[in-house]
Image (cartoon, rainbow, N blue to C red; front, side):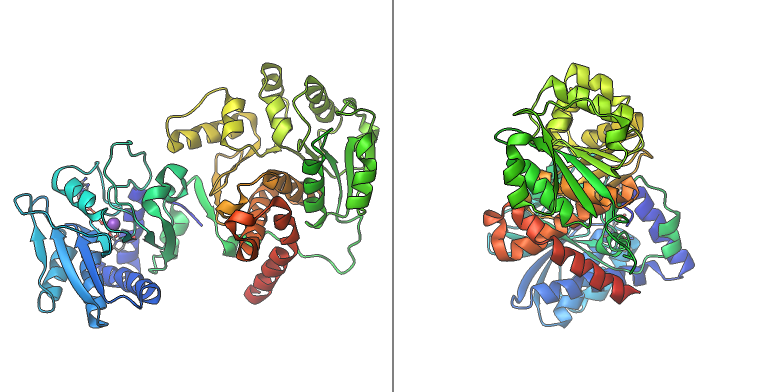
Length: 512
Ligand SMILES: NC(=O)C1=CN([C@@H]2O[C@H](COP(=O)(O)OP(=O)(O)OC[C@H]3O[C@@H](n4cnc5c(N)ncnc54)[C@H](OP(=O)(O)O)[C@@H]3O)[C@@H](O)[C@H]2O)[C@H](O)CC1
Ligand SMILES: [K+]
């Protein structure tokens, strides 16, 4: 699903009006109806609401919502906030339509500000995607007053928040409990810095013209379920373990075998035909008894010491995963070097200590040599270390992320609430699954195992990264229902991979 800019939203809007064709007032009616249906489903037991409407089309939506909710028996109070005399045409028409049912409380710069209370249920229709400067004066005062309420449902986007550019820390912005956005998600929704303003967000369909959406060019995408399920490859009836690939996982060291085991188990639960785990020899019994399905390749040392791999040793593998539990050690750079040199055609994913080792000055020299489409999966701190610099805000972080993956032609999965998968073509794909319970030790090792398995099965690396991240989050979403965000551990993710695959195959069947 595309994530488009505020300007593109306006263009898609106009195209829909001209080509469907539909009048702008009817499109507004449709948008407000979609919002109201969502609202009535989720707030059926409350009867009294306050709707705060601004002067533009976001405010116009608010006026229609007021009319609809009133007709369903809600007690509705409407505030129109008019910083200047300028209002949009569709705002005026809807104010007129509402006037016989409800009288608005009009607030201008000379009025007394209304008071809002903790227990108020507010609908925020002050400003939407038309915001073009930070809120000030009356608009800022009203938002501050509204933020006293515990429950605020934002129409399209919280007022004061920009759709696709950075807000400064001082900006006054609605702190919504929920945001109901029209059809396409906004870039602002993907960024951790905006989480407190947006709350939980949901999309409602308003029938924007598919041609206009198809024509909009963007670097940003949202991996929603409908797209994600198309990535899962069908298994042929005649497939055997040879067709499903042989993965090599180089992971674990003295005291850190847990990471290797978590990763190996996840790899085996993600469809790989065969897995060899290369780890220090002391771990042999542990691995054999805990993961009987894996082959063990012993390293002579407590920590990894086999840094030289020959083409002959590597040639039987269809993917290599490297990093979980390796520790920071100069030998690891020699290992990466050797793999790049002798196995450059084997898809490769580097995580955890693999990335930490690339973040050393000598390691950075290796970045240029990574084979095209190598996948790395840093969390933000690891990415900062890799870049050797920080960023001022999440928009700058996205720019740095894109620059990095284009420059080195690698795939970067930057882990977070909406993990961002940056591809060498400059596109960034935000994930839709996952929950805060997954922020726990070993969760990243599981992701490495999943992606290694997909690479071994010959998923193209971009799909392996995007789909692997989706699967990992989906397993987390299934796990959280039983385990809660507090009690979840990384093994719960692996334990729920089978249910995640079942869910995806069921959806594939439904859609075919
Ligand atoms: N395709 C869709 O998704 C549809 C969206 N709809 C809704 O329309 C809004 C966008 O409406 P728009 O009228 O373009 O903009 P706003 O309502 O957000 O803002 C109105 C005007 O307010 C002025 N403005 C901007 N920033 C500020 C500010 N900081 N303080 C005061 N005033 C501000 C600006 O005008 P200026 O001339 O003053 O610059 C805006 O034009 C979208 O979010 C949806 O809710 C449709 O209803 C259906 C289709
Ligand atoms: K709003």
